[in-house]
Length: 579
Image (spheres, rainbow, N blue to C red):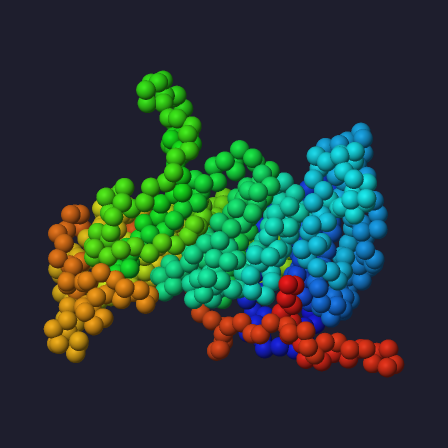
Protein backbone atom coordinates (compact mmCIF):
# COMPACT_ATOMS: atom_id res chain seq x y z
CA UNK A 1 0.00 0.00 0.00
CA UNK A 2 1.74 3.16 -1.13
CA UNK A 3 1.66 5.97 1.39
CA UNK A 4 3.38 9.31 1.26
CA UNK A 5 4.62 10.51 4.63
CA UNK A 6 6.07 13.72 5.84
CA UNK A 7 9.78 13.69 6.55
CA UNK A 8 10.39 12.33 10.03
CA UNK A 9 12.38 9.75 12.00
CA UNK A 10 11.16 6.23 11.38
CA UNK A 11 10.78 5.27 15.04
CA UNK A 12 7.87 7.68 15.44
CA UNK A 13 5.71 5.88 12.90
CA UNK A 14 6.37 2.26 13.84
CA UNK A 15 3.99 2.05 16.83
CA UNK A 16 1.27 3.58 14.64
CA UNK A 17 1.54 0.50 12.43
CA UNK A 18 0.81 -1.84 15.33
CA UNK A 19 -2.26 0.16 16.29
CA UNK A 20 -3.66 -0.04 12.78
CA UNK A 21 -3.51 -3.82 12.90
CA UNK A 22 -5.97 -3.94 15.78
CA UNK A 23 -8.67 -2.88 13.35
CA UNK A 24 -8.79 -6.67 12.72
CA UNK A 25 -11.75 -6.71 15.13
CA UNK A 26 -13.86 -3.87 13.73
CA UNK A 27 -15.99 -5.88 11.29
CA UNK A 28 -18.26 -6.73 14.26
CA UNK A 29 -19.64 -3.19 14.09
CA UNK A 30 -20.69 -3.20 10.42
CA UNK A 31 -24.43 -2.69 9.95
CA UNK A 32 -26.61 -3.62 6.99
CA UNK A 33 -26.35 -0.15 5.48
CA UNK A 34 -22.59 -0.03 6.03
CA UNK A 35 -20.22 1.24 8.66
CA UNK A 36 -19.48 4.96 9.05
CA UNK A 37 -16.08 5.73 10.58
CA UNK A 38 -14.65 9.01 11.86
CA UNK A 39 -10.88 9.35 12.05
CA UNK A 40 -11.09 12.52 14.11
CA UNK A 41 -7.39 13.40 14.23
CA UNK A 42 -6.30 11.81 11.02
CA UNK A 43 -2.95 13.56 10.29
CA UNK A 44 -1.82 12.17 6.92
CA UNK A 45 -4.75 9.71 6.77
CA UNK A 46 -2.81 6.46 7.01
CA UNK A 47 -5.25 4.77 9.34
CA UNK A 48 -8.26 6.21 7.50
CA UNK A 49 -7.14 4.52 4.29
CA UNK A 50 -6.65 1.23 6.08
CA UNK A 51 -10.20 1.41 7.41
CA UNK A 52 -11.43 2.00 3.86
CA UNK A 53 -9.28 -0.66 2.23
CA UNK A 54 -9.05 -3.42 4.82
CA UNK A 55 -12.29 -3.49 6.85
CA UNK A 56 -15.17 -5.17 4.97
CA UNK A 57 -18.48 -3.32 5.01
CA UNK A 58 -17.18 0.20 5.58
CA UNK A 59 -19.48 2.64 3.80
CA UNK A 60 -17.98 6.01 4.71
CA UNK A 61 -14.72 7.22 6.23
CA UNK A 62 -14.51 10.82 7.40
CA UNK A 63 -10.89 12.01 7.47
CA UNK A 64 -10.71 15.04 9.75
CA UNK A 65 -7.79 17.16 10.89
CA UNK A 66 -7.35 20.74 12.04
CA UNK A 67 -4.18 21.16 9.98
CA UNK A 68 -4.83 21.93 6.27
CA UNK A 69 -1.39 20.53 5.47
CA UNK A 70 -2.40 17.16 6.91
CA UNK A 71 -5.58 17.02 4.83
CA UNK A 72 -3.67 17.93 1.65
CA UNK A 73 -1.23 15.14 2.42
CA UNK A 74 -4.15 12.79 3.03
CA UNK A 75 -5.54 13.78 -0.37
CA UNK A 76 -2.21 12.88 -1.99
CA UNK A 77 -2.23 9.53 -0.20
CA UNK A 78 -5.75 8.85 -1.49
CA UNK A 79 -4.50 9.41 -5.03
CA UNK A 80 -1.33 7.37 -4.55
CA UNK A 81 -3.45 4.40 -3.51
CA UNK A 82 -5.92 4.66 -6.38
CA UNK A 83 -8.95 5.82 -4.38
CA UNK A 84 -9.64 9.14 -6.11
CA UNK A 85 -12.89 7.74 -7.51
CA UNK A 86 -14.02 7.08 -3.91
CA UNK A 87 -13.27 10.62 -2.77
CA UNK A 88 -16.32 12.72 -1.85
CA UNK A 89 -15.73 16.42 -2.40
CA UNK A 90 -17.44 19.15 -0.40
CA UNK A 91 -18.96 19.14 3.06
CA UNK A 92 -21.24 16.16 2.54
CA UNK A 93 -24.13 16.40 5.02
CA UNK A 94 -23.01 19.76 6.39
CA UNK A 95 -25.03 21.51 3.67
CA UNK A 96 -27.99 19.12 3.69
CA UNK A 97 -30.84 19.00 6.12
CA UNK A 98 -31.37 15.66 7.83
CA UNK A 99 -34.88 14.24 7.49
CA UNK A 100 -36.24 11.21 9.26
CA UNK A 101 -38.92 9.23 7.49
CA UNK A 102 -42.27 9.27 9.29
CA UNK A 103 -42.80 5.70 8.13
CA UNK A 104 -39.61 4.49 9.84
CA UNK A 105 -38.69 6.51 12.89
CA UNK A 106 -36.53 3.74 14.30
CA UNK A 107 -33.33 4.76 12.59
CA UNK A 108 -31.55 7.69 11.03
CA UNK A 109 -30.54 6.64 7.51
CA UNK A 110 -26.76 6.76 7.09
CA UNK A 111 -27.24 7.01 3.33
CA UNK A 112 -27.48 10.77 3.85
CA UNK A 113 -23.72 10.57 4.30
CA UNK A 114 -22.54 9.82 0.74
CA UNK A 115 -20.53 6.66 0.40
CA UNK A 116 -16.80 7.19 0.09
CA UNK A 117 -13.85 8.98 1.68
CA UNK A 118 -14.60 12.45 3.05
CA UNK A 119 -11.68 14.84 3.59
CA UNK A 120 -12.34 17.83 5.80
CA UNK A 121 -10.35 20.45 7.68
CA UNK A 122 -12.04 21.06 11.00
CA UNK A 123 -11.99 20.89 14.75
CA UNK A 124 -12.52 17.31 15.89
CA UNK A 125 -14.63 18.26 18.91
CA UNK A 126 -16.92 20.48 16.82
CA UNK A 127 -17.40 17.72 14.25
CA UNK A 128 -18.44 15.26 16.95
CA UNK A 129 -20.77 17.71 18.69
CA UNK A 130 -22.53 18.13 15.34
CA UNK A 131 -22.92 14.34 14.99
CA UNK A 132 -25.12 13.56 17.97
CA UNK A 133 -28.40 12.85 16.20
CA UNK A 134 -29.69 9.65 17.84
CA UNK A 135 -32.11 7.28 16.05
CA UNK A 136 -34.86 8.01 18.61
CA UNK A 137 -34.99 11.76 17.89
CA UNK A 138 -37.90 12.91 15.72
CA UNK A 139 -37.80 16.13 13.68
CA UNK A 140 -40.52 17.86 15.72
CA UNK A 141 -38.40 17.43 18.86
CA UNK A 142 -35.59 19.60 17.54
CA UNK A 143 -35.27 23.24 16.58
CA UNK A 144 -35.29 23.36 12.75
CA UNK A 145 -32.15 25.47 12.67
CA UNK A 146 -30.31 23.03 14.90
CA UNK A 147 -31.64 20.03 13.00
CA UNK A 148 -30.30 21.54 9.78
CA UNK A 149 -26.72 21.12 11.04
CA UNK A 150 -27.03 17.88 12.99
CA UNK A 151 -25.79 14.62 11.47
CA UNK A 152 -26.27 10.97 12.46
CA UNK A 153 -23.99 9.34 14.98
CA UNK A 154 -20.95 7.35 13.87
CA UNK A 155 -20.52 3.58 14.05
CA UNK A 156 -16.85 3.91 14.99
CA UNK A 157 -14.72 6.84 16.13
CA UNK A 158 -10.93 6.75 16.34
CA UNK A 159 -9.14 9.27 18.59
CA UNK A 160 -5.36 9.35 18.39
CA UNK A 161 -4.09 12.78 19.49
CA UNK A 162 -0.57 13.78 20.38
CA UNK A 163 -0.80 13.59 24.18
CA UNK A 164 -4.08 13.29 26.04
CA UNK A 165 -7.44 12.40 24.51
CA UNK A 166 -9.31 13.92 27.47
CA UNK A 167 -10.50 17.08 25.62
CA UNK A 168 -12.26 14.96 22.98
CA UNK A 169 -14.04 12.37 25.12
CA UNK A 170 -17.16 14.36 26.02
CA UNK A 171 -18.09 14.89 22.39
CA UNK A 172 -16.97 11.41 21.34
CA UNK A 173 -19.24 9.49 23.74
CA UNK A 174 -22.22 11.45 22.37
CA UNK A 175 -21.33 11.07 18.70
CA UNK A 176 -21.06 7.27 18.79
CA UNK A 177 -24.16 5.20 18.10
CA UNK A 178 -25.60 2.74 20.60
CA UNK A 179 -23.28 -0.29 20.51
CA UNK A 180 -20.64 1.53 18.45
CA UNK A 181 -16.89 1.26 18.85
CA UNK A 182 -14.74 4.03 20.33
CA UNK A 183 -10.95 3.67 20.01
CA UNK A 184 -8.85 6.00 22.18
CA UNK A 185 -5.09 6.48 22.39
CA UNK A 186 -3.24 8.51 25.02
CA UNK A 187 0.49 9.18 24.86
CA UNK A 188 0.72 11.39 27.96
CA UNK A 189 2.35 8.66 30.03
CA UNK A 190 4.26 11.22 32.10
CA UNK A 191 0.89 12.18 33.57
CA UNK A 192 -0.83 8.77 33.59
CA UNK A 193 2.33 7.06 34.85
CA UNK A 194 2.64 9.30 37.91
CA UNK A 195 5.51 11.65 37.05
CA UNK A 196 3.04 14.55 37.05
CA UNK A 197 0.15 13.45 39.30
CA UNK A 198 -1.33 16.95 39.42
CA UNK A 199 -1.65 16.93 35.63
CA UNK A 200 -3.26 13.50 35.65
CA UNK A 201 -5.81 14.58 38.24
CA UNK A 202 -6.63 17.71 36.28
CA UNK A 203 -7.22 15.74 33.07
CA UNK A 204 -8.74 12.49 34.29
CA UNK A 205 -9.93 13.20 37.84
CA UNK A 206 -7.73 10.47 39.32
CA UNK A 207 -4.38 10.21 41.08
CA UNK A 208 -1.70 7.87 39.68
CA UNK A 209 1.19 6.32 41.63
CA UNK A 210 4.75 7.18 40.70
CA UNK A 211 7.27 4.32 40.57
CA UNK A 212 4.63 1.68 41.27
CA UNK A 213 5.33 -1.61 39.54
CA UNK A 214 1.82 -1.73 38.06
CA UNK A 215 1.76 1.85 36.73
CA UNK A 216 1.14 0.66 33.14
CA UNK A 217 -2.08 -1.11 34.06
CA UNK A 218 -3.13 1.67 36.42
CA UNK A 219 -2.77 4.14 33.53
CA UNK A 220 -5.23 2.06 31.48
CA UNK A 221 -7.66 1.85 34.37
CA UNK A 222 -7.53 5.60 35.02
CA UNK A 223 -8.33 6.27 31.36
CA UNK A 224 -11.25 3.80 31.42
CA UNK A 225 -12.52 5.32 34.67
CA UNK A 226 -12.60 8.79 33.17
CA UNK A 227 -14.21 7.51 29.97
CA UNK A 228 -16.94 5.70 31.92
CA UNK A 229 -17.71 8.80 34.02
CA UNK A 230 -17.99 11.00 30.91
CA UNK A 231 -20.32 8.46 29.25
CA UNK A 232 -22.39 8.14 32.43
CA UNK A 233 -23.36 11.82 32.26
CA UNK A 234 -25.43 11.00 29.19
CA UNK A 235 -26.95 7.75 30.45
CA UNK A 236 -24.39 5.64 28.61
CA UNK A 237 -22.01 2.89 29.70
CA UNK A 238 -18.81 1.49 28.25
CA UNK A 239 -17.75 -2.11 27.77
CA UNK A 240 -14.00 -2.55 27.20
CA UNK A 241 -13.18 -4.79 24.26
CA UNK A 242 -9.38 -4.50 24.35
CA UNK A 243 -7.16 -2.34 26.57
CA UNK A 244 -3.41 -2.47 26.04
CA UNK A 245 -0.23 -0.67 26.92
CA UNK A 246 2.32 -0.62 24.11
CA UNK A 247 5.63 1.16 23.62
CA UNK A 248 5.04 4.67 25.00
CA UNK A 249 1.24 4.86 24.92
CA UNK A 250 -1.99 3.23 26.04
CA UNK A 251 -4.86 2.34 23.71
CA UNK A 252 -8.38 1.22 24.57
CA UNK A 253 -11.25 -0.07 22.44
CA UNK A 254 -14.66 0.25 24.12
CA UNK A 255 -18.25 -0.27 23.07
CA UNK A 256 -20.66 2.49 24.11
CA UNK A 257 -24.26 1.66 25.05
CA UNK A 258 -27.41 3.54 26.04
CA UNK A 259 -27.88 1.97 29.46
CA UNK A 260 -29.25 4.12 32.27
CA UNK A 261 -29.63 1.09 34.52
CA UNK A 262 -25.97 0.26 33.91
CA UNK A 263 -24.98 3.76 34.96
CA UNK A 264 -26.43 2.99 38.39
CA UNK A 265 -23.91 0.16 38.71
CA UNK A 266 -20.99 2.33 37.68
CA UNK A 267 -19.73 2.73 41.25
CA UNK A 268 -19.32 -1.06 41.45
CA UNK A 269 -16.72 -0.90 38.66
CA UNK A 270 -14.80 1.98 40.22
CA UNK A 271 -12.34 1.60 43.06
CA UNK A 272 -9.41 3.00 45.01
CA UNK A 273 -5.90 1.60 45.35
CA UNK A 274 -4.21 1.57 48.76
CA UNK A 275 -0.47 1.10 48.26
CA UNK A 276 1.93 0.45 51.14
CA UNK A 277 4.63 3.10 51.36
CA UNK A 278 7.26 0.55 52.37
CA UNK A 279 6.69 -2.57 50.27
CA UNK A 280 4.76 -3.75 47.20
CA UNK A 281 1.62 -4.76 49.14
CA UNK A 282 -1.57 -3.12 47.88
CA UNK A 283 -5.33 -3.34 48.25
CA UNK A 284 -7.98 -2.51 45.64
CA UNK A 285 -11.36 -1.62 47.15
CA UNK A 286 -14.58 -0.81 45.23
CA UNK A 287 -16.28 2.56 45.64
CA UNK A 288 -19.55 0.82 46.52
CA UNK A 289 -21.15 -2.58 47.02
CA UNK A 290 -24.55 -4.04 46.24
CA UNK A 291 -25.60 -7.44 47.54
CA UNK A 292 -28.26 -7.98 44.87
CA UNK A 293 -25.96 -7.18 41.93
CA UNK A 294 -23.12 -9.25 43.36
CA UNK A 295 -25.48 -12.19 44.00
CA UNK A 296 -26.82 -11.97 40.44
CA UNK A 297 -23.29 -11.91 39.01
CA UNK A 298 -22.34 -14.87 41.17
CA UNK A 299 -25.31 -16.83 39.85
CA UNK A 300 -24.29 -16.11 36.27
CA UNK A 301 -20.67 -17.12 36.89
CA UNK A 302 -21.61 -20.30 38.73
CA UNK A 303 -24.63 -21.05 36.48
CA UNK A 304 -26.91 -21.30 39.52
CA UNK A 305 -30.53 -21.69 38.41
CA UNK A 306 -32.28 -22.37 41.72
CA UNK A 307 -33.61 -19.15 43.28
CA UNK A 308 -32.94 -18.27 46.90
CA UNK A 309 -36.23 -18.73 48.75
CA UNK A 310 -34.93 -17.75 52.17
CA UNK A 311 -36.32 -14.25 52.74
CA UNK A 312 -33.93 -13.59 55.60
CA UNK A 313 -30.89 -14.11 53.41
CA UNK A 314 -32.34 -12.59 50.26
CA UNK A 315 -29.88 -9.96 48.97
CA UNK A 316 -31.04 -6.35 49.09
CA UNK A 317 -30.76 -4.03 46.12
CA UNK A 318 -29.08 -1.26 48.12
CA UNK A 319 -25.88 0.55 47.21
CA UNK A 320 -23.50 0.92 50.14
CA UNK A 321 -20.33 2.94 50.41
CA UNK A 322 -17.14 0.96 49.92
CA UNK A 323 -14.78 0.04 52.73
CA UNK A 324 -11.05 0.61 53.05
CA UNK A 325 -8.28 -1.69 54.28
CA UNK A 326 -9.17 -0.83 57.88
CA UNK A 327 -12.34 -2.92 57.55
CA UNK A 328 -10.23 -5.73 56.11
CA UNK A 329 -8.26 -5.81 59.34
CA UNK A 330 -5.30 -3.90 57.96
CA UNK A 331 -5.43 -0.23 59.00
CA UNK A 332 -1.75 -0.13 58.07
CA UNK A 333 0.46 -2.42 56.02
CA UNK A 334 0.40 -5.86 57.61
CA UNK A 335 3.98 -6.64 56.64
CA UNK A 336 5.77 -3.40 57.53
CA UNK A 337 3.32 -1.38 59.62
CA UNK A 338 3.68 1.49 57.13
CA UNK A 339 0.80 3.77 56.10
CA UNK A 340 -0.90 3.62 52.72
CA UNK A 341 -0.81 5.92 49.72
CA UNK A 342 -4.10 6.29 47.85
CA UNK A 343 -4.45 6.17 44.06
CA UNK A 344 -7.51 6.45 41.88
CA UNK A 345 -10.39 6.32 41.47
CA UNK A 346 -9.82 3.83 38.68
CA UNK A 347 -11.73 1.24 36.66
CA UNK A 348 -11.67 -2.15 38.41
CA UNK A 349 -13.89 -4.03 35.95
CA UNK A 350 -12.65 -6.21 33.06
CA UNK A 351 -10.14 -4.72 30.62
CA UNK A 352 -11.01 -7.00 27.71
CA UNK A 353 -13.80 -8.95 26.03
CA UNK A 354 -12.13 -12.35 25.87
CA UNK A 355 -14.57 -13.71 23.28
CA UNK A 356 -13.65 -10.99 20.78
CA UNK A 357 -9.95 -11.31 21.60
CA UNK A 358 -10.09 -15.06 20.98
CA UNK A 359 -11.89 -14.56 17.67
CA UNK A 360 -9.19 -12.14 16.57
CA UNK A 361 -6.51 -14.70 17.50
CA UNK A 362 -8.35 -17.39 15.52
CA UNK A 363 -8.49 -15.13 12.46
CA UNK A 364 -4.78 -14.37 12.64
CA UNK A 365 -3.93 -18.05 13.00
CA UNK A 366 -6.22 -18.99 10.11
CA UNK A 367 -4.65 -16.28 7.96
CA UNK A 368 -1.17 -17.57 8.75
CA UNK A 369 -2.01 -20.82 7.00
CA UNK A 370 -3.54 -18.97 4.03
CA UNK A 371 -0.77 -16.62 2.87
CA UNK A 372 -1.60 -14.21 5.74
CA UNK A 373 -5.13 -13.57 4.39
CA UNK A 374 -8.35 -14.57 6.15
CA UNK A 375 -9.74 -17.55 4.20
CA UNK A 376 -13.32 -16.52 5.10
CA UNK A 377 -12.98 -13.17 3.36
CA UNK A 378 -12.89 -11.12 6.56
CA UNK A 379 -9.94 -9.37 8.14
CA UNK A 380 -7.05 -9.48 7.57
CA UNK A 381 -7.72 -9.00 3.86
CA UNK A 382 -4.04 -8.29 3.14
CA UNK A 383 -0.82 -9.66 4.66
CA UNK A 384 0.19 -7.85 7.86
CA UNK A 385 3.94 -7.58 8.37
CA UNK A 386 3.36 -7.18 12.13
CA UNK A 387 0.97 -10.15 12.36
CA UNK A 388 3.41 -12.11 14.55
CA UNK A 389 3.74 -9.25 17.02
CA UNK A 390 0.00 -8.66 17.08
CA UNK A 391 -0.65 -12.36 17.60
CA UNK A 392 1.75 -12.41 20.56
CA UNK A 393 0.03 -9.38 22.12
CA UNK A 394 -3.45 -10.85 21.80
CA UNK A 395 -2.34 -14.24 23.11
CA UNK A 396 -0.79 -12.53 26.14
CA UNK A 397 -4.04 -10.64 26.69
CA UNK A 398 -6.10 -13.83 26.42
CA UNK A 399 -4.08 -15.43 29.24
CA UNK A 400 -4.68 -12.64 31.77
CA UNK A 401 -6.95 -12.97 34.80
CA UNK A 402 -9.82 -10.73 33.78
CA UNK A 403 -11.22 -10.20 37.32
CA UNK A 404 -7.97 -9.28 39.08
CA UNK A 405 -6.92 -5.62 38.91
CA UNK A 406 -3.19 -4.73 39.03
CA UNK A 407 -0.25 -7.02 39.64
CA UNK A 408 3.00 -7.63 41.54
CA UNK A 409 6.38 -7.33 39.85
CA UNK A 410 8.32 -10.37 41.05
CA UNK A 411 11.84 -8.84 41.10
CA UNK A 412 10.53 -5.89 43.11
CA UNK A 413 8.90 -8.20 45.65
CA UNK A 414 12.08 -10.22 46.11
CA UNK A 415 14.39 -7.21 46.23
CA UNK A 416 12.46 -5.87 49.22
CA UNK A 417 14.00 -8.66 51.32
CA UNK A 418 17.37 -8.72 49.50
CA UNK A 419 16.88 -12.20 48.10
CA UNK A 420 17.39 -13.61 44.64
CA UNK A 421 14.39 -13.45 42.34
CA UNK A 422 12.24 -16.57 42.58
CA UNK A 423 11.89 -18.30 39.19
CA UNK A 424 8.54 -17.27 37.74
CA UNK A 425 7.32 -20.81 37.16
CA UNK A 426 8.11 -21.84 40.74
CA UNK A 427 6.45 -18.76 42.19
CA UNK A 428 3.26 -19.28 40.22
CA UNK A 429 3.35 -23.01 41.02
CA UNK A 430 3.46 -22.14 44.73
CA UNK A 431 0.41 -19.93 44.28
CA UNK A 432 -1.42 -22.71 42.43
CA UNK A 433 -0.51 -25.29 45.08
CA UNK A 434 -1.88 -22.92 47.73
CA UNK A 435 -5.22 -22.76 45.86
CA UNK A 436 -4.89 -19.40 44.11
CA UNK A 437 -4.93 -18.33 40.47
CA UNK A 438 -2.23 -16.33 38.72
CA UNK A 439 -1.35 -15.01 35.29
CA UNK A 440 1.06 -12.70 33.50
CA UNK A 441 0.35 -9.21 32.12
CA UNK A 442 0.82 -8.35 28.46
CA UNK A 443 3.06 -5.30 29.06
CA UNK A 444 5.34 -6.52 31.88
CA UNK A 445 7.26 -9.83 31.53
CA UNK A 446 7.88 -10.08 35.30
CA UNK A 447 4.29 -9.32 36.33
CA UNK A 448 2.20 -11.67 38.46
CA UNK A 449 -1.54 -11.06 38.56
CA UNK A 450 -3.07 -13.15 41.33
CA UNK A 451 -6.14 -13.35 43.52
CA UNK A 452 -3.96 -14.35 46.47
CA UNK A 453 -3.90 -11.92 49.43
CA UNK A 454 -0.72 -9.97 50.09
CA UNK A 455 0.28 -12.12 53.04
CA UNK A 456 0.23 -15.27 50.86
CA UNK A 457 2.57 -13.60 48.36
CA UNK A 458 4.94 -12.71 51.20
CA UNK A 459 4.63 -16.18 52.78
CA UNK A 460 5.97 -17.63 49.53
CA UNK A 461 8.85 -15.15 49.64
CA UNK A 462 9.54 -16.02 53.29
CA UNK A 463 9.55 -19.73 52.48
CA UNK A 464 11.98 -19.07 49.61
CA UNK A 465 14.27 -17.12 51.94
CA UNK A 466 14.44 -20.04 54.34
CA UNK A 467 15.88 -22.15 51.51
CA UNK A 468 17.87 -19.28 49.98
CA UNK A 469 18.98 -16.94 52.78
CA UNK A 470 19.07 -13.33 51.58
CA UNK A 471 22.30 -11.39 51.45
CA UNK A 472 23.06 -9.09 54.35
CA UNK A 473 22.64 -5.44 53.53
CA UNK A 474 25.68 -3.33 54.29
CA UNK A 475 25.28 -0.91 57.16
CA UNK A 476 25.26 2.69 56.05
CA UNK A 477 27.16 5.55 57.67
CA UNK A 478 23.90 6.89 59.04
CA UNK A 479 23.17 3.60 60.78
CA UNK A 480 26.65 3.46 62.24
CA UNK A 481 25.94 6.84 63.84
CA UNK A 482 23.18 5.22 65.86
CA UNK A 483 20.10 6.04 63.75
CA UNK A 484 17.42 3.45 63.24
CA UNK A 485 18.01 0.84 60.49
CA UNK A 486 16.02 1.69 57.38
CA UNK A 487 15.76 5.36 58.34
CA UNK A 488 16.69 8.24 56.07
CA UNK A 489 16.05 11.28 58.28
CA UNK A 490 18.03 13.01 61.01
CA UNK A 491 15.86 11.62 63.79
CA UNK A 492 15.57 8.12 62.43
CA UNK A 493 12.28 8.77 60.64
CA UNK A 494 11.30 7.19 57.35
CA UNK A 495 10.87 9.64 54.50
CA UNK A 496 8.59 8.84 51.58
CA UNK A 497 7.82 11.10 48.65
CA UNK A 498 9.39 13.99 50.62
CA UNK A 499 6.74 13.58 53.33
CA UNK A 500 7.39 12.90 57.01
CA UNK A 501 6.93 9.27 57.93
CA UNK A 502 6.61 7.53 61.27
CA UNK A 503 9.66 6.37 63.16
CA UNK A 504 10.90 3.06 61.85
CA UNK A 505 12.37 0.78 64.52
CA UNK A 506 13.58 -1.97 62.23
CA UNK A 507 14.64 -2.54 58.67
CA UNK A 508 11.82 -3.30 56.19
CA UNK A 509 13.31 -6.64 55.14
CA UNK A 510 13.73 -7.64 58.81
CA UNK A 511 10.11 -6.82 59.53
CA UNK A 512 8.82 -8.82 56.58
CA UNK A 513 10.98 -11.89 57.27
CA UNK A 514 10.28 -11.85 61.02
CA UNK A 515 6.61 -12.75 60.50
CA UNK A 516 5.52 -16.36 60.79
CA UNK A 517 4.59 -18.27 57.65
CA UNK A 518 0.84 -18.98 57.73
CA UNK A 519 0.48 -20.56 54.29
CA UNK A 520 1.54 -24.06 53.32
CA UNK A 521 4.10 -23.31 50.61
CA UNK A 522 4.97 -25.94 48.03
CA UNK A 523 7.28 -25.04 45.14
CA UNK A 524 6.66 -28.33 43.32
CA UNK A 525 5.72 -27.66 39.72
CA UNK A 526 2.63 -29.71 38.75
CA UNK A 527 2.81 -31.77 35.60
CA UNK A 528 1.87 -29.68 32.59
CA UNK A 529 1.88 -26.45 34.60
CA UNK A 530 2.94 -23.35 32.71
CA UNK A 531 2.34 -24.75 29.22
CA UNK A 532 1.55 -21.85 26.88
CA UNK A 533 0.46 -21.35 23.32
CA UNK A 534 3.39 -20.63 21.06
CA UNK A 535 3.54 -16.88 20.48
CA UNK A 536 6.03 -14.04 20.39
CA UNK A 537 5.36 -12.24 23.65
CA UNK A 538 6.95 -8.99 24.87
CA UNK A 539 8.71 -7.88 21.66
CA UNK A 540 11.81 -5.72 22.10
CA UNK A 541 12.00 -2.19 20.74
CA UNK A 542 12.68 -2.34 16.99
CA UNK A 543 15.56 0.13 17.07
CA UNK A 544 17.73 2.34 19.25
CA UNK A 545 16.48 5.63 20.72
CA UNK A 546 12.94 4.34 20.71
CA UNK A 547 10.31 6.84 21.79
CA UNK A 548 8.00 9.67 20.75
CA UNK A 549 9.23 12.71 18.89
CA UNK A 550 8.10 16.32 19.13
CA UNK A 551 4.57 17.23 18.18
CA UNK A 552 3.80 19.11 14.99
CA UNK A 553 4.46 22.72 15.94
CA UNK A 554 2.55 24.54 13.23
CA UNK A 555 5.78 25.80 11.69
CA UNK A 556 7.32 24.75 8.41
CA UNK A 557 3.90 24.30 6.83
CA UNK A 558 3.14 23.74 3.17
CA UNK A 559 3.26 27.08 1.36
CA UNK A 560 1.83 28.12 -1.94
CA UNK A 561 4.38 29.37 -4.46
CA UNK A 562 3.71 32.37 -6.70
CA UNK A 563 2.96 30.16 -9.66
CA UNK A 564 0.31 28.22 -7.76
CA UNK A 565 2.49 25.17 -7.12
CA UNK A 566 3.04 23.51 -3.74
CA UNK A 567 6.27 23.04 -1.90
CA UNK A 568 6.50 20.78 1.11
CA UNK A 569 8.98 21.70 3.81
CA UNK A 570 9.98 19.39 6.60
CA UNK A 571 6.97 18.63 8.69
CA UNK A 572 6.30 15.97 11.34
CA UNK A 573 3.69 13.41 10.35
CA UNK A 574 2.34 13.05 13.83
CA UNK A 575 -1.16 14.45 14.25
CA UNK A 576 -1.16 18.11 15.18
CA UNK A 577 -2.59 19.35 18.43
CA UNK A 578 -6.28 20.25 18.20
CA UNK A 579 -6.43 22.29 21.39
